Image (cartoon, rainbow, N blue to C red):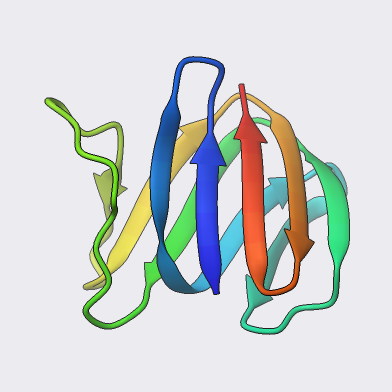
Length: 96
């Protein structure tokens, strides 16, 4: 699936991913390929991104706001809150 993370300042992430885990108001939840359409508000926490094999983030940074995990191809992005929309195998996170 395709994931975009958008902040008020810029689009911070665009890439093909295998999964994304987000901090929802009722707890964390994960989305995989072909997840049912959903709109959810998000709370403060880390977005866990499982990059697809060979996938690279299309947005370049002087200093990356992403943290890498102990697992290969996993990135973490901290948000203060926001909204998530998943539709047609594309997830968009509007993050604070």
